[in-house]
Image (tube, rainbow, N blue to C red):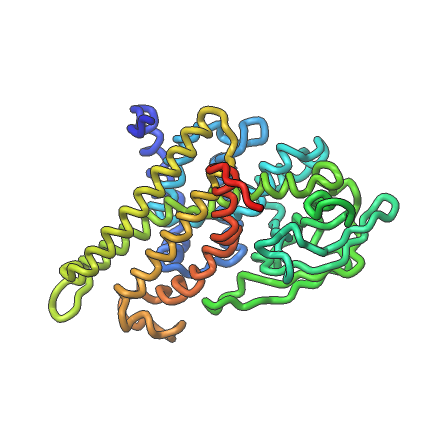
Length: 393
């Protein structure tokens, strides 16, 4: 695999770098740099700027409004986006649901929903996990019972990220209890304003409101909102998760985090010396960078396969597994570098360098990275079965 950029790709990289420098609002750049949570309005406004340039749905085919980039161009764009400290954006609609609708949706669903995702008219959230069906997702119990042209949905979902901001949810529901539990699952699109839906907040360990519980009580959903065939939800869900897990790896943002950690170690000190002079810290930074480099090359191999026409497959579990481990490793180093400046929790005014203000909150929330999107144990099972060909009884 040749990882050298061509002259055309280098020119594209420069174009993207200059565009971010000219178009990224300074306040969004600073908030992203410091790890401050953005509001819904800020994220939507930024994504509409990207969409105006044609650079929002970078992984979509041209026929659906994508820029028709190669896998290498998408890689370059994400690296430059992270380098510029630009927000990632709304992954639920763009990275997860969009590809699902292209692969399984009706023409009517594509014509209606895809432009609305691209224009940020809809904010989607994900209805997968339940209190008793997280890592064992196939055990979900939320029921959708046929009633004429509609389904009547009852049940609950948990960890609904930004469900309090969303106007729509894509949801796994049980439409049959016959046969294997995976065979009775279907994939529904639901309007969050439908009577019978209640969203309750979950305040996460970082003190922010990202997450929610979502309850469905006799929620009426038109059958035209079924994606794929009834009972095909497990297949649709697995397809979506390969896109989610590839994204969760977060290579571009981890590279920027690594660069910032090394800079902080050089610029900040203890006992009159730069922190970088500590041999133990240097060894930890070197180990983290080696792990990140290995992750990046795994990501590049996946990109090469994608460029050859292969859809994301079980290899995405490798990216998710190693990517989240690297994120946790870097967040731990951030706390070690910050030292006593990591102790204050959302202090009034700055305590020490501003870049340390969100260090502990970032560390705390990143503890969940090896759980969401499929726990480490789930990913290892996928790798063992689908890549190594091992059988379990």
